[in-house]
Length: 312
Image (tube, rainbow, N blue to C red; front, side, top):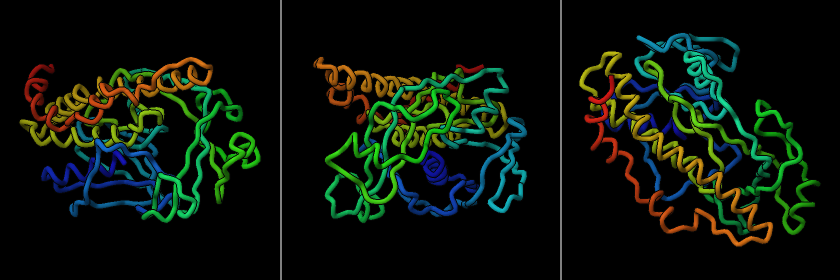
């Protein structure tokens, strides 16, 4: 989501050579829905080239020109060079690991002790989260987790047990397979940027689903680099790096706050389950105003030059 949105906004800003390296084999249905809140949306642009079935395996250089290696489905590898790399490679980001290694920092992942069952049901069931042109409905439920290993380095997704799920949700049963999705959060990173490389979305701040903001914040992230790079005074490495650091300055405080609020709502849900009356943050008019009235591109355009000039 963040990678595609980055490409779309860069194309809209007039950048001509935009390449998207995607692990999936195509831009089709992948079996799970996401919650996309109404503060976001994007439309198709024609000036983007896709490379499907590719996985980033190594970042060879962050500057002066970015170099990285991809592995294709047939096992072959290719070395790529680019002026700027926006890494939207998700919660298990190879780019994040390489970037943090450059500054000798080890990221910390916190286990929430919760997981989500996810699956799909026929569209005639009458649920509310539709995907694939409303022919399938996505479901996700959150409950205390007892099946994942406690180590945060373990996988986020595992095959779920329908029998176990039926015990928890005896009045509802999905068609097809059931997947369990481990819910973890990552402590804020010291930086999202190194050289001409910047992290986007889950690569720098995976969030819990309680505010419906994971995809929306990734798209907000994606919009800002295009805005600040298009206003960069020159195309040399120093200006590119400053522009990407402006992106981080514009986005980091807001994204980090929403990640924290999503984690807080999980705590509120636990308190409510224990008999205490605690309002969910998502239901707060002030929180909704903060989330839905924000214009990330306006903020970037209005503050770009002053933030850029303030960086050494």
